[in-house]
Length: 205
Image (cartoon, rainbow, N blue to C red; front, side, top):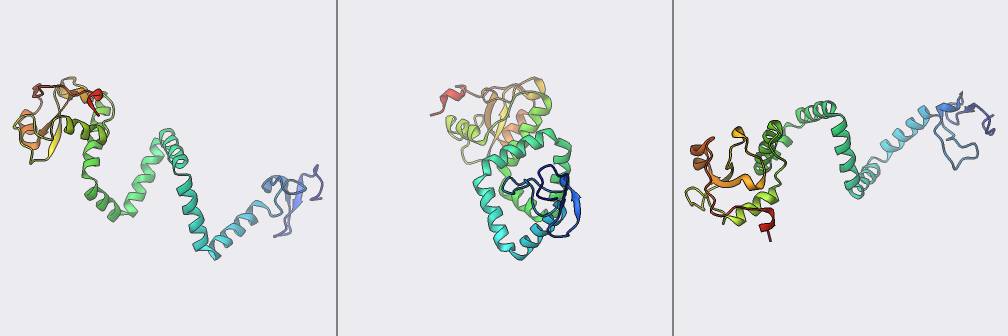
């Protein structure tokens, strides 16, 4: 029965039960074109092997992830875009199970978080695109890493929108100027341009 290409049933080599051919995975290496074990028994066999060779399985999995990093990232992005609600729930569940990782990541990536929040705000208001950290660093280089309002260099600089987003300004490089926290706070939502020369992407080396 199992050797006939026309057969719609097959005997599982493990459980010895006669099952519909749909209950077997296809395998071009086999004479009849299907695995010798049914899907259920095949799954049990795989789990048993993984359990008996946990370290080896972990190594194989890590090697695959490393060699297919770009492919995995692209697939993840496509899936996240197609399933935003599922992605949100999955991430929330993972974050709840790994609170310490989240705290450490936030502590070590404050700059990324700040950029993310500004990009998120810009997207919500529909006023411009993304700002990469590399682009912001190029802007800081262009203006000498100093606050364009008070001129101080020994302070942490923040992104200020020359034309505030609230007033219709864009979240783009030609609307950015570096200001220290106090100067940025005092400026608030006013349209004040402290730049003598305007930064453009072409200005970068």
